[in-house]
Image (cartoon, rainbow, N blue to C red; front, side, top):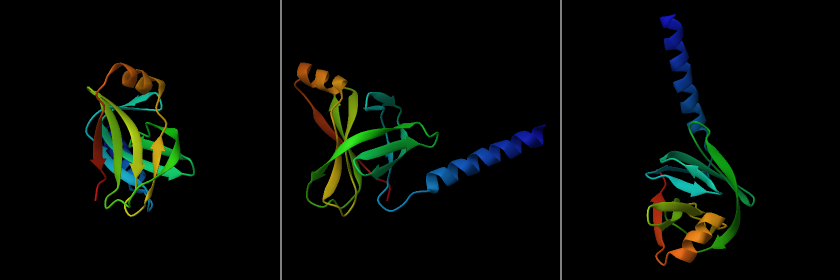
Length: 134
């Protein structure tokens, strides 16, 4: 029975490594140090992969916990690093944008109802930027 448990654990860890290792150019791999909200869903702090596809992004962690999110394109000067941009109201973070190194077109998320309500009641919104793993 013990051998089975060891083999099972080894298989789980190997699968996690394969899942996290299956990124392609343009994916953003990032360690987010705080819990955050995206598309009305609360995600815990942790290691995430963000994949862009047309007008959507998919953000997920090693447990495949995540969400598909509608976005719109945004133009800025080309970024020297990939990054996630968050709007912060007090201790509450909302994912607001995804920028990929070398591109001047990024993905911005639509503000959720919860973010719009916080913005209406709190004057102070700060940006928080988390750079991607290099």
